[in-house]
Length: 239
Image 1 (cartoon, rainbow, N blue to C red):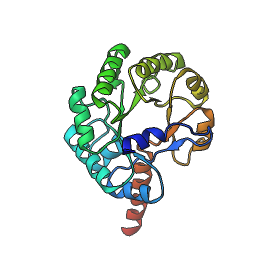
Image 2: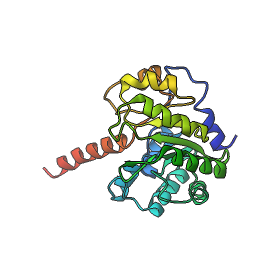
Image 3: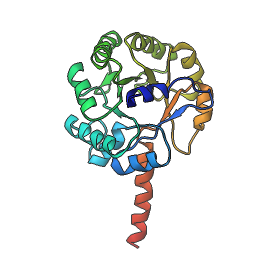
């Protein structure tokens, strides 16, 4: 099986209390730490990678993001999915080519740009083109940004998710959805559901799985925890 096949298989046949947990490496060193700990796959966070490169979230040039992803994939033997924000304005063919060249087996793709939600039908058509270009070589995780943009209606998220699944998305990511609505989302969305967790805060991955999560990611949370620990060490050194 290819890494893409392995990655796709990891999302299926799981018990509710055993969601797929994907740590988010921000560079090659952190990727090796997570792989050596035994995680079967990894998923980069765009904000964490941006911080490692000295950029604010959403400000990383595409070339630097793809180069960072390539360094991460080269450093480990497990599948790596890449958060590439809204696709950086690339045409589907070029986006797929660049992801594959970087060694990624999957991607996160947002349905908002510059803080505004995209038209869901147009975004679904674009996702269908990405799927067509990628065939089965990439796992497409379609992010639904309604909650993060202040729209707290689960039905709106489910409507968008249905369009994206019909377009060929392998997984749906209703980022920032309150934990209380996860059972509704799980019931209304066909296929795997990605939920973001905060390390050490809120429900555990197993508890999120029982609420409806198929896969757990952490956004930039792990990178920020590591930066906080380093900040504490630095403070001790200057005393």
